[in-house]
Structures are given as C-alpha cells and as structure tokens.
Image 1 (cartoon, one colour):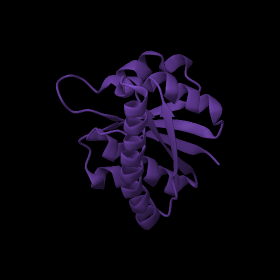
Image 2: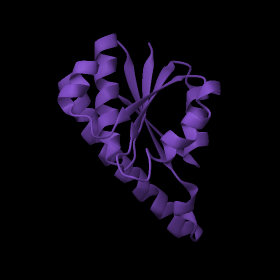
Image 3: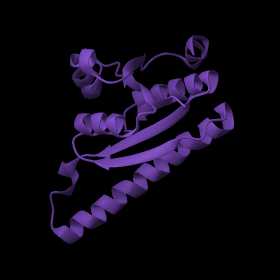
Length: 151
C-alpha cells in the first residue's frame, strides 16, 4: 500500500497537510503515516530533567496525533500510523522515508506569512530532484472545499 507521509508539528499549515493526506489516501486506497520529530535542542539539560522533558514531548505528540487520527478515522475511514523520531527534522524525515519503502508521497503544508513557506518546505524543495519520493505542498490557506475538490 502506498503511504502519504505527513509531518506533525505546531504550525497552522499542518492542518491542511493532514486533511490533504487523509483525503488523498481515502480516495486512492492508500494509508497515512504521521511523523513527529522531536528536535535535540529541547533536551539540553541535566539527564533527569531531559528524560522528563522527552516524556512530556511524547505525551503532547500523542495527544495532538489523537485529534488528527480521530478525524481521519471518523471522516475519511483512514487509520493513520504515528512515528516519533528524535533529531533534526530534515534528516529524520529522509531517514523515515528510507526506513519505510511504502512511503510514496511526502505531504507538506506551506506557511502563508511573508517569511516564506516554512523551513521544511524550503529545505526539502532545494533537494527535491534527488529525493526518493514525490513531494506535495499544500497551501496553508486553502479552504476545506478546495481541498475536497482537488483530492
């Protein structure tokens, strides 16, 4: 089964990327894998404090994931998988794609502010010609109706 990989983070554009991935998967018989990456700079503390912060980060990710997973199951009939990795986001995304050969499309949400589309979109599109999967960039301000129409 072909999977759509979508990145779970705290950005506004993450919502449209999640919606797009779920709708495309539902319409094409695919699956959705949701990847959350915990950056290493969150744990530059004493070992005991670092372990507590890591566990709290994982709990936040699971709570955030459950919101999206419930919507995907209830509205699209898709039961997404959650993967949590620790490290720098771009290398961890590429490592996940290498580790899971069923991933066919990386779905990214593009920011709508004047700073640009966001760091992941910027970094990954620079190397898009040599990536092992297709990338779909979903505009952050695309309406639900338009998303439904194009998926």
